[in-house]
Structure formats: C-alpha cells, structure tokens
Length: 358
Image (cartoon, rainbow, N blue to C red; front, side, top):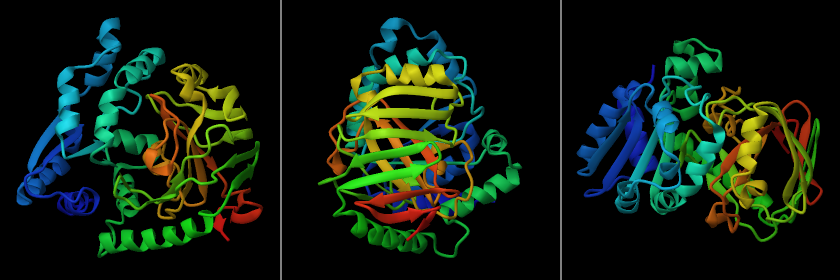
C-alpha cells in the first residue's frame, strides 16, 4: 500500500517545492481522501495555505450533460481568478468511473475546452503537477486487483524505494545524457508496424521531464517544427482522453497537418477532437518514454506515455519552453509502442531500437 504521508511529502517538496505563504490548490475526488488529508497536513506544516477542491461521484457527467450552450462558450470568472492567483496547483486523478464521460457528446467537451483556454494559460504560468491515487476503477481499467494496482503505482512513483527523491534525481541525470544526444539533431524518424514518420526538431529545446510536473514521469520531450511532419504513424496503445476508449489510431501527415485520420474504436472522438480548432491537426509534442518501472499500459496517459521504450506524439498545443508555437485547446498524447519492433533515429543515427536505447 502507498503511504499517504510519504506521497504527500514527495509532491510538496520535490514536485511543487511549496514555500511559506503560498496558496496551493489541490483537486481530486473523495476517493483520494487519505492523500488529500495528508497533503493538507503537509502544506500546513510548510506554513502555506491548502485549498482542497473535491468532486463527488457523477459530478462531472452531470455538469457536462446539463451545461447550456452559452456556458460551454464561456467560463466562471472565479475560475480565472483562482488560476491567476494560485501559487501552485495539484491535480490528483482518482476516478470513481474511468468511463464517466462516455455518454457526453465529445463536441461539447471540445467546445468548452476552447472557451476555457484563458484559464489553462493562466494555470500553466504557475507551478503545477498532475498525479494519481489508485482506485478500484483505475485497477479495473488496468486489469489488476486493487492491491496489485496500488503496488504498481507505488513502483512507478518510486515510492517503493528508500529515497524516492534520490531515485528521481538519478533518472533526471540519465535523461540529461539522452538530451545531449538529441540536442544537435535536426530530423527524427520513427519506424514501426504501420509507422514511418519524419519530423524536424531543429533548433527546438528538449525538456527533461523528471517528475516535477507529472508524477510519475520519465520522458524527454520537445515541440517539433509545426510544418515538418511527413508520413504515417499508427498508435497501438489505447487512450481514453474523455472517458471513451480510442484505439487503433492511424494518422497521415503532410507538411505538418493531419490529412487523414481514423480509429478502429472511438473514431467519433478522434474526428471531433481534430475539428476543435486549426491547431488540433498539428503536432505540439514528441516525447520518448524512459520509465522502465512502468512495464505495461494501464489506459491512463499519465502513466502510459512514460513507458520506457515508447514514443508519444501530441496533437495540439505546444509547450512554449520547447520553442513550439502551435496553439490549440487540445493536447492529446498518443502512444506508439516500439518495444517489439520499432526504432527512432536522429539524423540517421539509431537512438532507440526495439525499446532499448543504443
């Protein structure tokens, strides 16, 4: 089982670096109560102000099903005030039902995401982190018992180790070595079953994702040149961005734009997402997973995109720190597993072959 106090300390000290006097907003469901109470205690011990935002079963579905068209095209002013004045925010995934939004029209969610762009932009300018507390619903989605899933999460977070912070620091050092290899690269090529995609990363900044924004983490990422993607990519790891499983996604790019897209399952979600805005058809991120403590996909992008030996591409919004300029209300990470038969080359030099770094 996960020790809530140890988890809270990792989030406060390593991820958010909470300081006295700060305001820290924590969002989750009531299923994460052990961690939420531990976080409140930890934030108070650091003489900062905790603000818990706890949702109830069915709350999300009821809101998105009932909101009027006018509300989908706007946002509550108080939400923008909070995002602008908060020093740090923490989102803890702890689902009652991983398919809660399956019955909500995906076009409504895309519409609302576009309207709420100012809130998201304000929050991104401050310290933030996303993590997960294991629940029965999450375990069921992962195909594990609740006990096994809790152990899996602990290993992914390095909470099963004597000094989790030291372990994250060690991973950061290894990722820095990988970034040094990639920093001078101009063209990346991804090859695998149903995949042959080229894109340019010339002049872009690679980011060492070492657990401070995502916990767990374990990836290096950058923003490809917006008009550079050419070829076809097939994503064989399912994702559920809005409570609906989308799997078997194939995208074809020309001059950086998705010109053809299909999904074996959940195609209506894919098409609605691509129609959100012009930026939703371009890539905002390429990331390479390095966390070999995550050895299987569990249907949660936060974990699946970090699997060591995988690559993920995100449609939509770029991270400005990479030099990326694509703007969109969408940021959807899609994962391609290269561990069986696949490779990434940088200017013709192999970087990753069959899931192993060269």
